[in-house]
Image (cartoon, rainbow, N blue to C red; front, side, top):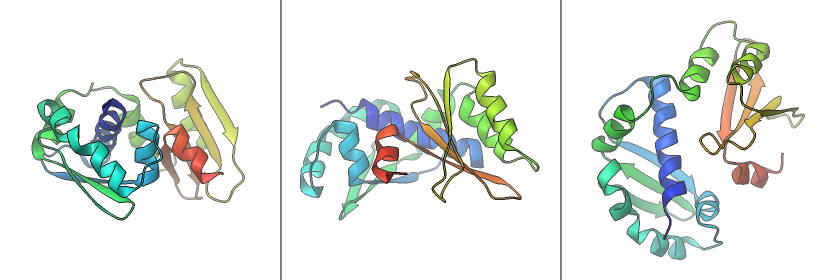
Length: 177
């Protein structure tokens, strides 16, 4: 079984958390809906089938993230990453990384959508940008053909600050924005 997409997602979420809150060698719990897990494995399984599919995941990640455990309640799966996992991500994450720059920018008082667009353009990667009129978000931006950062970034200007969420393309499509 190829667990790489799931492991990459866990690492990316931990990196984002560390960019927002700082690093601590601590245990982390991350939650995924069944639909997202099915996207990682190109399956359409139920809870029992997913639990069976994940049986080799702990052994797969042990060298890097420690003994990752998982459980579920219905279609909601919880991944428990031990302190060694947060330490691994901290040590193996480049100092200057886009998510860190984005978190710092959005956290600044007075951040504007123009500032965010400029950050994306500064990477010199080809980006896709479009306005969204769904009530949830104002703008979608993502890097085209970037396997290192496959996320769709959705931004909402709430007047006094800008919030964002990032989704994998398949999860974004599931929302039918």
